[in-house]
Length: 607
Ligand SMILES: [Zn+2]
Ligand SMILES: [Zn+2]
Image 1 (cartoon, rainbow, N blue to C red):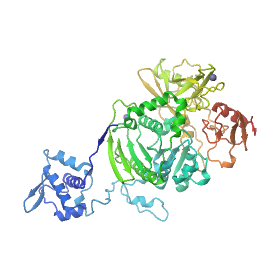
Image 2: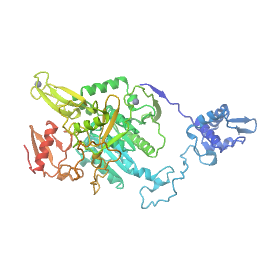
Image 3: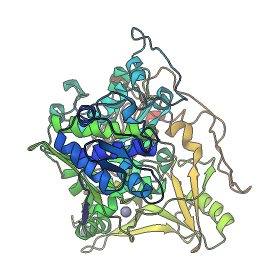
Image 4: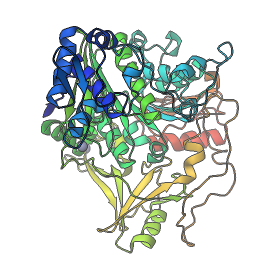
């Protein structure tokens, strides 16, 4: 990995920078004498030697001049020295003139209050966020309206979500596919012993809402690499990665680049941690930071995916709650900066070494040939839903726009068949590769690992075009790509919006709105995509907020399904990983179908 060291700013650089800024903004006028050394030393909180270094660098840049036995005088700023002044001033330019105040420069300083921020005296007895009003740059409305996606609800995710909830970040979306186990309790502030086996995302969302009932939360029990619609990312103000593996980071990185969103990554191991912000088009992205070897490993993983997921999911990294709170704290602050449109150091990494308490920043080198570097163009919002629209529907829409050559490009490989190399048994399958379990990848007859046929292009020749997008693993509110070899078009399943993005979990009312679609809708007459205006998923079986006692548990016992409990609600997980659908050895499709049938007819037991 190539990295460029960023020179550390010394105290004298900082002092010189602030003086240069004062020259530039006119608070130190040409010809005037600088304050005495003693005064400047106090003001900057630096030693005489450091101050003299700073003055010397200003002198070398022709910004001040020394008059023997009198002192330092400000020189006129003109074409000959303005560049140097600006370079020295750097980040201090456009800030208030420090010499106008008596505040020490080393401590926290108030940034001038923007004229748009009205003077407001908060009621600290009643207003939980009142003290934040005293932070000069804090914009309450921006924080309350912010939408933040937190990917991963492990040690880092717990810290970040806790912080965001405390700070009143108004809308938090949490995605994680994992369940809580005892070992998580030692480093996850939001988990309790009684949470064992519950979904991390759900528990964390509930606790965030409990910390601050004024915020809105939503959780999704799914794998970010496959289960999150891009339309969710598209509507976020910031994305935080609290992940523990490269594959998920790479996926988040690509999604964020495609949607042109900044994301904040954090990583921890033992007492070491790092934090970095990636902004599309500004410096390196996460993929740029990966070595050739790492990229090869990942692509190998993609081509041999039946075995891959298990391996990825096994990687457990030892961490402590302390490093999680340090890195999670920095990540949360970066989110706050993104919400406020404040500058962030994109494409750089902050390393923290807890053994030495050393912290340093380095910049990554962007790679020109990096595959993540492209952003979706204009997105067509369709009133379509993943569960209703078929591949054929989408292909027809794409062909109306792009001509008969148009094909759909899927984000993940679709397994179309499994064939056993030893007994040649052949099975037609139509599942996204992420849903094929290790067991399903093996031959039911002889136990051999089967060879899979994959595709990720829908060309119109397929026999399975009548299947819905959901059936082939397209998540709700996803944005699909189509192209004709020259031009891309992007289609969002905006009909899913009310269900897929609402921030209303753990609130008394979950809105039942008509699918709202903005932007232009390119729907051809012959294509029927709009759902009847009944409230969606009414007769479906869904649980979101119900009490645990009302849930149905489905367990597999020797290829049979048993359903215990009161069959009013059951969670329809998209995969066998789902919390309630615990049927690892049975094909997910079968499980889901049987569960639906049994529940519709209110059978208590299905075998
Ligand atoms: Zn890149
Ligand atoms: Zn076989």
